[in-house]
Length: 141
Image 1 (tube, one colour):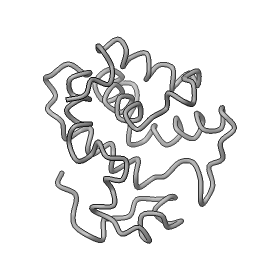
Image 2 (cartoon, one colour):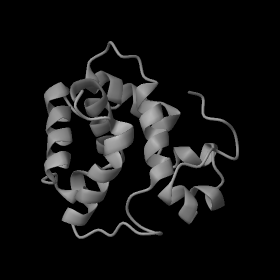
Image 3 (cartoon, rainbow, N blue to C red):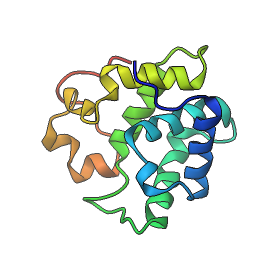
């Protein structure tokens, strides 16, 4: 199994830097998205990821010159589905081990949502703006 971050402190650094909008864009990877989600879920009771992550991601994108519109930037359905995947992981293991297990699962693939949504539905304006239920098969959690 691949090791994405050496310890929980490295994951906290990713989450804190994302929120502060100081995480270099090159480090905002698929694994970093999940690392941030897991860190928020476990370490920041003041933040409700399902409610607050949209604004955090939008602000991060804009801080690096990104655009959040109907075709780019923040994507509500992918974010909410990813948060569900992160919450489905066993809560007892250290964050870095949980992340490695999540990334070794089918959800570690960047295109994992396409197992549940058709490309047309997932990349629609409606899915980007709001939650759309999967149209291929229900999520397993």
